[in-house]
Image: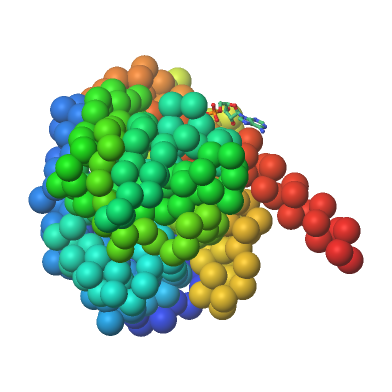
Length: 391
Ligand SMILES: Cc1cc2nc3c(=O)[nH]c(=O)nc-3n(C[C@H](O)[C@H](O)[C@H](O)COP(=O)(O)OP(=O)(O)OC[C@H]3O[C@@H](n4cnc5c(N)ncnc54)[C@H](O)[C@@H]3O)c2cc1C
């Protein structure tokens, strides 16, 4: 679909950034768009599309070439993410989690671990997953209970993870476990677990409301034996790895939400100019214009917050609050704009024959995963208060 006045080009992008954005846009429109509705309908993750993204160099945009990455900025990565999500939110989220898993390895792994684990992930031959959530610990991640018991030849993992994106299909799982529950957050430790680890299996698959073309699965560890070099970083450093990586990961979720909201607005605006009621296009009605105007402002604001967070990250600045602001605002925007798009379509919007109902279902999840929007508010408020006390 061609653009209305919401394309992300108000600032000069470098040639490289434009190149990545255009590559992702063309890939999404040519190779994701034709089948996205069907994959959503069939609740099917298509691994061949991930492989294709690997061939195009989209699976490790912000990581160094030494480890097979594209060696580009976080900014270039969010540009690509917006384009993919504007067509296929499920694939954007799956890719974003794959990039998140790589970040944990990149930030906490030894040189040997990075050399072993990252190149196949960067090439798109190994898919990554990030496994933090458990049945009894979601927002309160520090309360996780998956055990990592030390053995003579490594660790034995016992427990269950739930809601793990790419869970059914991944090759490399970054898993957070505790070596000593009595130590609380100081016991949490990260591991890179391979799919074929004895004692590890994929459990049930979630039947989701949205992003149904991505897989979300339960992971079951029944004394899964991992070698010592599966551990990422030191014992007790795991929560820091998880929260630090999520802080960066949220920026790509914000970009994906911006893409979804943009697509919903484009569809709604086009439909409004075509649908005639009371003898004129509904786009001439001020109440419709009001929804379109609010959506256009929110999409641009979401993008600006996202771009700010990405630029801060590229400058090596902390993005704790900036990333949370972007994720909070962009996911709320995606939900609102998609809901208004359904409203603008009227009955046709409620039909599964039009894409706006999928946008609405897909948007909801982003207010929940990678930290609920209540949790984002807590992070933003804590930072605000800390800054005030320091000043
Ligand atoms: C589509 C999808 C994909 C996901 N992918 C992954 C993944 O790849 N890896 C992974 O580890 N997890 C994943 N998750 C899990 C996700 O991160 C959790 O669902 C999320 O963190 C919330 O945890 P919970 O579901 O246990 O909700 P709870 O923590 O039980 O929260 C329930 C409600 O209470 C609110 N709440 C909780 N604490 C507070 C508080 N202190 N103040 C105010 N409100 C509060 C929450 O905001 C929420 O509204 C995914 C979830 C979904 C839906």
